[in-house]
Length: 195
Image (cartoon, rainbow, N blue to C red):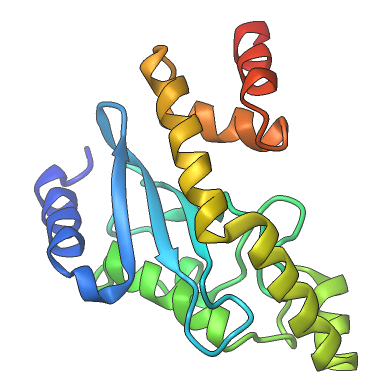
């Protein structure tokens, strides 16, 4: 059974209309099954001021199976892998319901940033730091937000992504290559052309 395109397009429109939510979504290429979500770091957290990108893939069975989501932006958080952006969140696994939407999932990620669950970690090192020294955890999370998700870096990153996209590459490819090249546009182009 193919994906319900009408439902996905409606969900995307709903997110686009609600500017106050702090989350946005963008289709990658020609398929609504590959998306990039964007969420603002919650106020009064170490992620405040950050802009975080999330890769979203929808299975043909969506909404009966959860979207596959992974942070593209590096995040220091017990429930998000600092290595690959994998997310430990119940609604992305066994607590998913077809009544939930992409907006619900993105808002849940925003809530997760506000309320870490170190007892059910994705990243054990971060969870240990969170439970052992909250001040140290918050300082590291704030530093990572400044380094990887600060609005100025994101604006610069967006310009680099757009330049690479204009050369005929997909947005997801451009983001992945820039991530591998630590933000160096020339290095990203070498990765893409060598791939």
